[in-house]
Length: 107
Length: 122
Image (cartoon, chains in turn orange, green):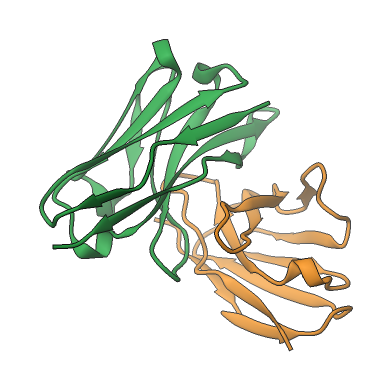
């Protein structure tokens, strides 16, 4: 199975900050990497697929990059509605493993 | 519009089984894989497996092999996930979720059910 490791597990930031979350795969997954955001009590929502493609309707302050084993999710200017957990997921193979999550909290 | 509507919350005793349903609408049911993902209270997302609604073929996470069964009924566009020999650490919200691809590549989950809380308690 491919293991996905996110860092940090949590971070504190202020509105307007630039936030970077990293995700590392245990083997080469080319660009088969997705990012999801989850609001409390809700199902996750896709932000980025194929490592860097922005899903329709997602604000452009979200961006993704990387290939192979190392990936990043960047929020260019954190907004109040962005405080939430974020998960990476590989879709290179089954099982479709998720990272353990990164909680973005208000400083 | 695409919708995945799941069955309601369940309370089960240890050792029992639970069967959660996921009714799809707004798209061709047999055209997309359906995945099951669970989330224990305060924890992250855990992939359980997937079903190909067209063929009925399944892939399960090793952790759940032998305890989970995913099925579907194409006549009513509904998928099912049954988990047996429940334990207290199976207490979680269970989601069904549709996976799509872009140009037959780069799969990702684009729609989720509302989640079904399964509580396992004696």
